[in-house]
Length: 187
Image 1 (cartoon, one colour):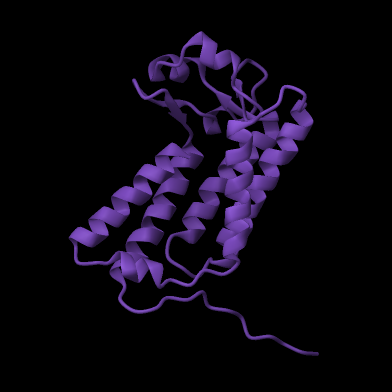
Image 2 (tube, one colour):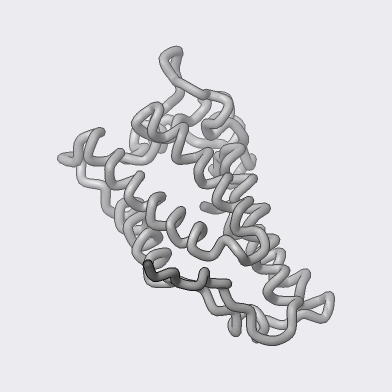
């Protein structure tokens, strides 16, 4: 989630420089906001605390639950700019994770990022090293940020672009933005 976070901060800064306002962003009303916080909380908890007793299947279920919460939030807010792009990026990550049981990490990307063998042996429940059995390897963490020990995927880039569009658009649009809701039909 490093790349999306950096892009969101950059998009907000560019919006402010171009006359936008963080107040405009704050006035944006999102639907189902609590669901994204639940999804992020699950990710944070298992990033910080991943007991060795949690098996691969439980780890996969927890990871997909977290992603599912965030996808649900994005879909519920699909009328806001960038959310469909972000949804697609996160879905790419979900597909490669579901296909492999965890997010595969390229050994060459890990080396380029400066990840040590000690860090690679403690990948936790969300990641695994790529090998010959890895499915959809082109969607895995195959890109690196040297010296920062960060690897990322195509899905992370697409997610970041979508979130950047969302933050920038909401920050430069004066007034209150809301998620369009469909009228209810009774029958």
